[in-house]
Image (cartoon, rainbow over all chains, first blue to last red; front, side, top):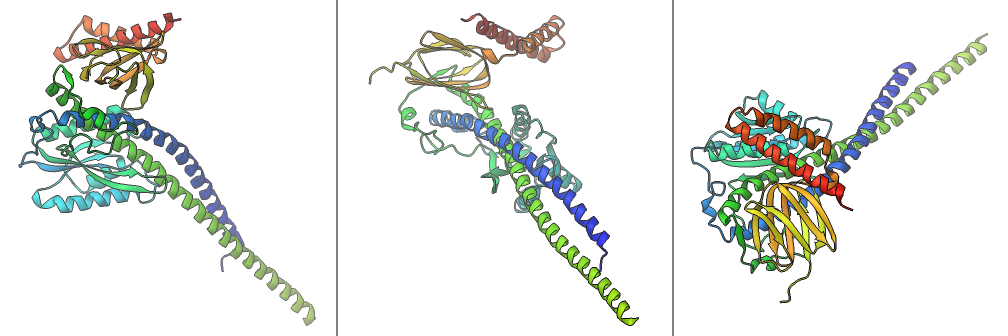
Length: 298
Length: 140
């Protein structure tokens, strides 16, 4: 039976852990709010871009641009895996890594998969196992900006256009709600066939495809030039969105995990306190018995 | 169809939706030159360059510094997809001034083709920012 002092020490240790997890939960919650606002703020741009792209796709020969053509046969698939820089967030990182592992196995037949790793956790995992890493970015989530997305997207475009990569995929955690993250595996390049005008359900409320469908545009300087400028921007916007989603999902996961940890430690404190009281009671009872039996003996 | 009297203007950047307003007139820095747009404009899609954008609501003009992107014009609606956009009152004049000085120095002693081009663009951006910022201050 553990002594009273040992039990008290344990309770104190659990309590201080609980304080840490509680503080981490608070921090995650406040950062989540900010990250969530950024995801929402970034949505109009992506939606507008989709609309313009849809409008253009109907008028320009889609095979004209290298980002729309199927990749070189000799290339290997490139998977860009977005993890977090830090842990203590439940299964957030391991889920992405697991999905990436499955992707590597399923794609492995046609040649080894190359990787682009965003976030320290994923980088450490795959680096240690000797994978072919083409793109690497760590520590970007503290000061996430469009420039990071630009760099990653341009590196991916470069891999693809040069023929080293046959296809490019994004694997990341999508922010659904505070409680749920969804694992997303999306094809980034070649850009998936854009459905003709109005078919995409991305239109902002109040603006449907009809208004743009009938219109015949003037292009300045010309449709091809705009198209080839728009496509890389589109890829960048996709990467940027994935980074923001992953960032928000990370804080949501961390908040949930820390909340659970705080709750578990309260439970633990309760049961330890109960046990401690029992031990104390037993000690008192024993002492009384000793006193009583000592008194009756004389 | 009657000619619309207002334009629903929307200016968005990758980070946020900056402006959403019904305007009477606007001017954007198109890649082929500045474009003035009034309600009832024919549908147009143009790429944008570094420059100054303004829009007018009633008698009031609002200025923005823009760098890169696209504009989609419809008879009753204009969407600006800008890489960078800053409202005149949000521009950090000290920073823009410092950027102008840096670019000036680099232009004075160019080292290599790429560097020169970069410095030129940086110069243009800082000049536009300063110009737009000065408009915000002089406006009553």
